[in-house]
Image (cartoon, rainbow, N blue to C red; front, side, top):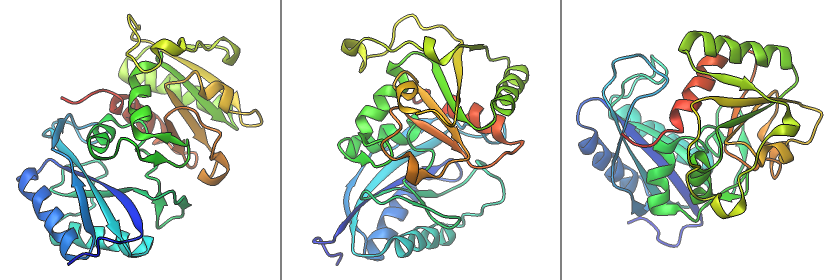
Length: 280
């Protein structure tokens, strides 16, 4: 039996859109339990549109699992990978169809950023399909980079005006990414000076902003400047060329980290924006 006096609280995200996701969800829970991860709570399954991957995919069913464990971080990650592999998961197409996807979202307040392990999950703060089920069983849990609860992060992706702050070492390259995205997807972006970012009044911060336009306002902030004042006004903060550790306490909004210059940056940003939408 799992040890109910384990030392670490962890949060795991489940996703699947191939085969029978509901059956695979329950199989994954049972497999985690057999591996000695004490199941504390399980969310219901939320149906969401597939974003970022190949077109024509079936809707995903997303859930969350809260556990307690004495296992080390690396061991816990290996358990998740083993469960995926035994369920027939392959990683051939990024964001493609899959029967089981298990992502480690939180491991207490641990921050690790390596080629092998990255926690907290680098895209959890803006993904409604992750935050909705996670908040069902762990709304009070703290995302350690921002220091905000999951409930607050979920509210911010719809409460703040549609403003993106990009903290960058190369504003020319960042502008090119946004312009390419606008050309490819027909999305409207409006450039705005960082000093003109608008912050919603405190009394509506946790409510949906009314009558917002379809356009996103984008401000490019030099990496030499303190990002926090700008992040306070943003629905999404984009950072590049930065490790997670030094960002701790400096971000005040959901964030997307772009790790190195890549022709995938427009796709990453487009998927982030799409992920901020609600469930299907």
